[in-house]
Image 1 (cartoon, rainbow, N blue to C red):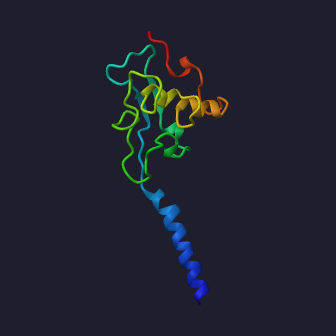
Image 2 (image 1 turned 180 degrees about the vertical axis):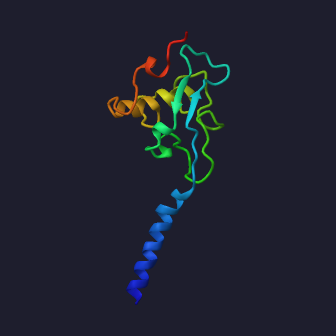
Length: 130
């Protein structure tokens, strides 16, 4: 009897830890355009981005500061990547998308997957301005 109760409680604990947090509906926009920060000097066009095309990824792959329960915020949210003047540093808006050494960035993730997961060249993401 004690063994059965212990087994049931263990299963309940595992379900609570791993399954229930995933029940929260996280409705990401299907398509969006990633715009530079206001006042940021840009040389390339904004990037069209499809959340739907990235649905197989865990949200935390990109939203690496998300706690898994609160509202998901964008990269340009306060306390995240709000530095539009510098290309380096933890708060760099540019680096959030172009850091080749971080799989949390677009370019880093795409390169880690040898281009099979998405584009790795500038003009593939940033179409030439017309």
